[in-house]
Image 1 (spheres, rainbow, N blue to C red):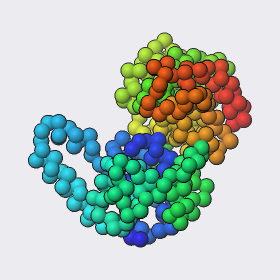
Image 2: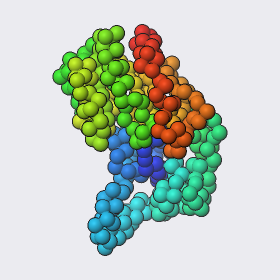
Image 3: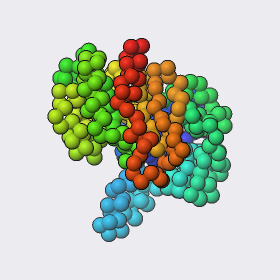
Image 4: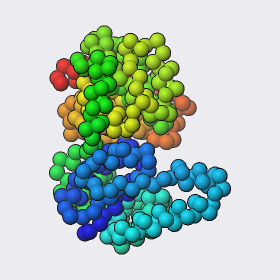
Amino acid sequence: MKSILIIRLSAIGDVVMASPLIRCLRARYPQAHIAWLVQPEAQGVLSANPMLDEVIVWPRSEWRKLWRDRQWIRLAREVTEFVRQLRARKFNMAIDIQGLLKSGIWARLSGAPERIGLGSKEGSALLMTRVIDKPEDHTRIGSEYRHLAHVLGLNPGAFEMDVALSDEDRRFADLVIQRNELMNGYVVICPFTTRPQKHWTATSWPDLASRIQKGFGIRTVLLGGPGDSASAQRMTAGHQHTMINMTGQTGIRQAAAIISKATLLVGVDTGLTHMGIAFNVPAIAIFGSTCPYLETGRSNTIIIYKNLECSPCGRHPTCGGRYQCMTSVTVDEVVASAARLIKTS
């Protein structure tokens, strides 16, 4: 096997959970050229990993803009050149671990003669030479990717997530700690994600930060992307003494570096939360409409999940926007979990 392409275009959390496959493939094919095709927003999760030879970025948003601007000739040229360069790598195998039509198309366009799809749907199975069904048991974090490794004859080992950091990333985190006098520890909170049914109540976060400072004598650091800045400003208004707002001020690996040095992480179903588990940081994950896992293999992780009759609803909530699965989680419950983890860390 001379050249292997992994395809998982998005989202950040899924790329994090699939990252153990890199180590598995490298152990099985130590001399192979291993590349990962990804969208720009998740590129940072992979770009510092020494076991990857290449991260190929699909400029999806740039192509969409060209389409909206009706620059069709330029778009056609860029697509053609991108495909030409992809095929020039002469991949022997493409592994589509996203299993959607858009990822399946890229597997086919890669020119790889062997194309393996994981749980392929939306017609993408027709583009594969082999499809591996997802396992029925999804309670363990990254279970579907671990199952794929088994079926492919790889040795999954501990199958631990791998978010690689650069020395520059670590220095950035150290500077944030020094500037904000966080040497005695801090709690990272990750409240933001893509869908409202995955959010905890906005008023609960400043209340939690206040309780943490009062009970444990440490402040909280709020992380999120540039698109979360307005929500973060509303959330931290009047609470700057307990919450340090770093939303939109970090790249994805810089945020990961801050997480790696935290005393505790509290978050919803978002990529940054999964990173806390990857770094073996004590973590509390609050799940509602989604429940990607209940087991992490870590003794210092607590999953809070209200398994209601309608749970998990995924992208199709039936509660009319009440989201009881999240609103029923109390600050007292999270503080009690935090006390358990901080005491044993």
